[in-house]
Image (cartoon, rainbow, N blue to C red; front, side, top):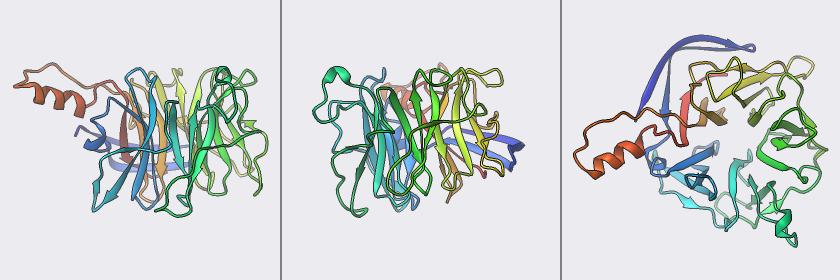
Length: 307
């Protein structure tokens, strides 16, 4: 497994990140068999994780699950409610009983011509029970626009990406407050977060203390998509997001963050490429080298870091 050791002392929007070394690694060998794997989330007890598997061009997109027993991850399995439609970007609720995701599956009775991406969820009574059929989050969260990448705080406030003409750019990050019974209308996050460019794939901390998200092709970026972090001031106003820097971002695409606050592990998707030409003894060695290392396709990475 390819490893990077980076030395740093970094202060980001009031969060001290001081490590003797940070080690960014591919998540697990079991996921590297897939050509495109992205959008990772893990339950807080570490026993199960969810992610998206896709065809090389992304036209086929399905949700999958792995479980952990004795520090060994199981073989991946597709989630049973997935069908011929696209499914992506899973987010597990704090209690583990709801799984949110984005899908272009049509609502019941809707015409196929009206198909677009909405936010959905499935639920289960206990961790060991089967998932329900998908339930559309409905209005005011969903609309005629495309909604993507749901993430929720512990009090169920919802943050997500929307492609809307009313936004500041092509993709922007929105927020819907939960009052205990229903969601309020989406609110566009302020200019410290959104811009005329691309902002998407936000992760909100459980206490809404910080937001990690992707900005694309920015002047202060490393190249392509970079991960940024923002925090709120004492009045609850989002402050300017700052690039997480070379400890995590590269000239390649970094996106889809998920932070496990219990283990202080940041998971993210990246399209890094470190392959070099070499002499292969046989096809198995070739396949193993290309699949198990950074090959320019989406893979899941992790790094221990304290925010």
